[in-house]
Image (tube, rainbow, N blue to C red; front, side, top):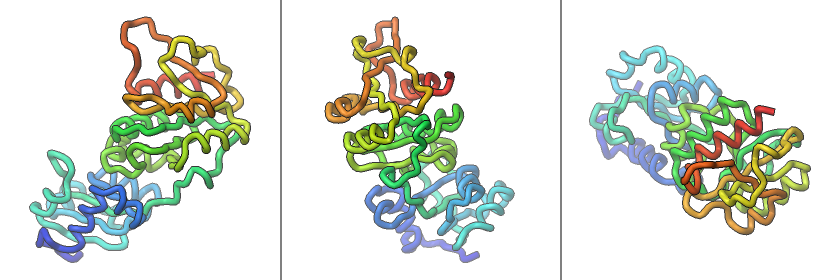
Length: 262
């Protein structure tokens, strides 16, 4: 295993650029992972590990995880603690990092089940929300997540917040939300626009047994008018308290539960 010691090493600079830039991730077809468990999850789920970086302490402390990653990685490097601090996006780095090859996750070409249950996030900005939705979606067993705008699906913070779920459950991205909703309508799926508007139909009253896609909008502005108009129904979560709306990931958890409980 080659040892890297210079912070200005081109491989380290490139890894940082993949970590920090959605544009670089998109153009390179790579994404960045940090942490023993998350990197090992990627290796175990047949994600192609392009480059893996380990500190000597990590190789010893997380030996079982490191073995799985090394077995799958195309290139492996030992790095200094100083480089680990540069690569890390957390307060207490574990000293394991990977660059992985992204799958083609284009929603327009995805195999969509006409009787499936999906969540659609439009312009959701907070990567923690995307990560939390991924965890809930996997835990409750829906078929996938569509994302349009907002943070990209390979954002490192979103992947970390998902605790590996975003690597296991299908997460697809699309370019134009309203056009994609129209395509879903043509496939026969029930498309639902979630809104805090009390005049919308209660989600608890909607029959989703034949397949449905529920759209959740931006944290501050909600769903765009074009996407709202494209959906077959507007739905709302019944609320008796004084709060006017829910956090995006909280709303998603309730909507997913309503999808699967029946």
